[in-house]
Length: 448
Image 1 (cartoon, rainbow, N blue to C red):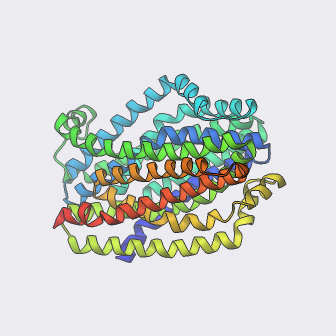
Image 2: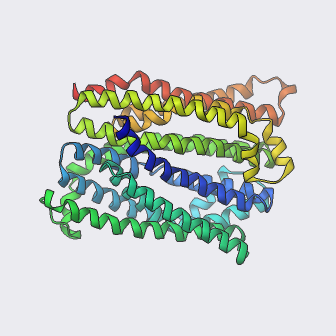
Image 3: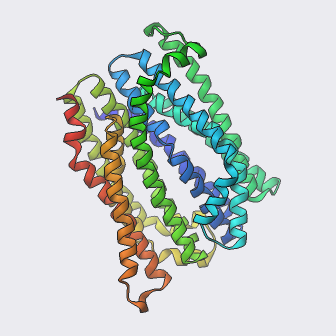
């Protein structure tokens, strides 16, 4: 079982590590321009996190449903699941493009910053928004391949996409001097390049499984077979829960950036750098979470209780091992890691005062990531939603109560920011704890 977990997790880790690597390259490029550029990338990236995270069900719901269909050897349903996901993805993407101006205005109400920071962030937004069809389409493609127990193909697509992004961003900034617009344009070109490659391999996979299906692999018949209301109802029920869960997740991360920007421009830049530690750990842990989606969904679909229990137990062991590894790495090389992103002494020195939080992130966060994958594979969306509701409410309660009861003489930016990070750690830890308590009821009970 460990071999099977690693065969799924390692390609996903490589896939995921390219995502923070891409953000790190963007941060490294603009981090040598000015603090305003760092803040603008932080705000611009968070705007798209706020948008795209809310539609993460296009990947998560697709992978869970597809894995269960794969385990049951129902390839007709596996094909229909993808058609539903991609149809919704494209419809949502074009809606976002049409609404780009009001979205940008709303973003200005959420995030604060100096005039230069806001203008740079808006420049980034209005270029990158045109990648929405490719970005959301890739969510559906990635989720489908993960559900089909194929983690390697999303890995190669992600590597190709991110190589294109890095090359284009560096070229546009260093050669054409297009500043933050060049970074955004590099992302747009890369997303469409990855989407085109993904569609190519998707068509090949559909042809490969065609002998095991009875439906016609043509656009109109596929749409008719896939978009019946009875089928869409379950799809929207599960994905509606995931959507609400992700809205809460987006609200927390958006609030962190917004709260940082309200404290000061320096704290905004500091927290943007600290978040790189969280991002790196989260994407590596998500490699094992994606393996959990594939295996848990497969074994539930196959009604294999023994393999289901074993896969969950081993996934949690891998999570504990990675937690110890990253805690040690951050303790030893935290300051060196910071200098990758910025050469501004003031920002680096300011960040060092908060570096101890990077040692707590792995401990509080590992189980939340793994249980997300396990519950997605089981399509246990209601428990995911409810645990996120409680954890998000706890985050805001800890933050506002902490500020409310703070003595007046301690209301300085350093203390405020530590309260913010305390609330974030409580949020991460509670998510994992609540899902652990409901593991038997929401996951194991499905095949008892």
